[in-house]
Image (cartoon, rainbow, N blue to C red; front, side):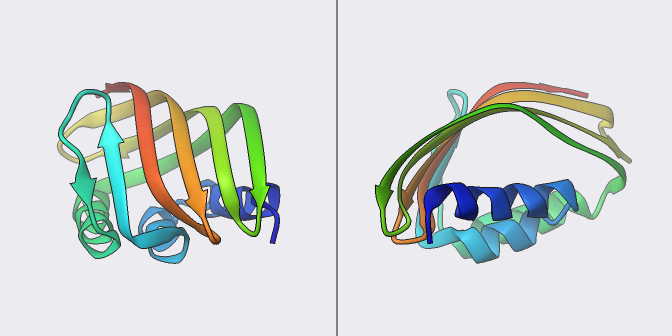
Length: 123
């Protein structure tokens, strides 16, 4: 499957608020995730579990807006996707959250092997 289709499916999950499911379905088992200058986190299962923990306190999800996307498709589900997006939700502990970020996804054989998030998380 081509990278544009795979990434589009992932964005579809995000549009529906299926964050943990997106991790489970699109991240490689040994994925590495980084947010700004924080230490990397590894492993699909631990990332999905942490996401579920955070989402338990989300009281309303207001969606995602993707502004720009660039795709370098190397074939067979491999390559790089860079996109700029905004998301908003209400959280019982953080209040109203507004995320503005640029995301870099490195795909290998149909799964995200490395993902970096650069941006702001404004509660």
